[in-house]
Image (cartoon, rainbow, N blue to C red):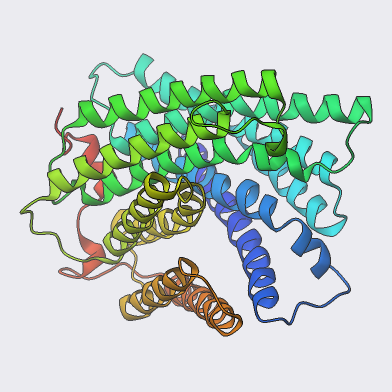
Length: 419
């Protein structure tokens, strides 16, 4: 079992490495494009062409679902490791190979189909681990919001990824469409839903140590949103196709509008429950809490824009995935793992990212685009420096420091979140 637990940590770190490399490539291409320095030869045109798939398929999902599940689920469930280790390794290998294939050759269809197979292996491992924990545990402790978020996000992917693979296979066999990127635009709604579920699960876990939330409303909102959105999206794909430009527009008539409406409503309700749980609580602005508050601020801005203008939550949740990922990374390395990292540099990274985000929400001039890209690049450099210093020293924190507090995952699994 100790070997299985060690392999689980390695698989989780592998998924985070895939997300980090894809994020650096996609983010670097975005910064160069905004600064007007994008080369017109080599791999850079390919990166610019597949920027959206890199961020959606190889950053958001591997980090928020596959990586954090492998790193945290065993501890949160009281297990030594994940079940089905061979399937777990296969999922990581297929996702990594598909990413290399997409970047090096620009082959869209083979890379995405390979990604679909690898991701199905990963989410089946996550769901099997969660369900198996209920079968072999005598004491039926309630799941924490993190476990519920990962379970529902994995279920959403288990139901939607085969639809994406089937539509792409049909297009390839029929020869009606050679460019697969428009199909991925239609798949952005399930990715948005995954970001909402996994992101709010992490945010609720971040504040669980200092506040007490009512578990049942949070789980009910997450479950209802996941079920309704998946049904609406799959039904719309079968009726109108997957490409976003083939879907009829109108209030709640297209799958995109239905999923965004459900996500907007769920975001409002979950943010309200989080604020009600933390009202008059003595919250310390730890680094993971800063990123969690940033996630809430970005999502709140998005759903306000969605309600006022009919557009905004989609892009806000994609940007919020970055905040949720950094929230989870610092929570895993610091409070959950108990390792030191330079807090001042981590705070500087958050400040730079927040400034870049504020610029991205306003109409950008050419100079503002350059500033936004530069701030984003500086924030990523701060993160690399923070994690580099943390892993090089690799020392446990001393008593009384920020990251020496009890594990949020352990405390929540013992009943910190009240039902």
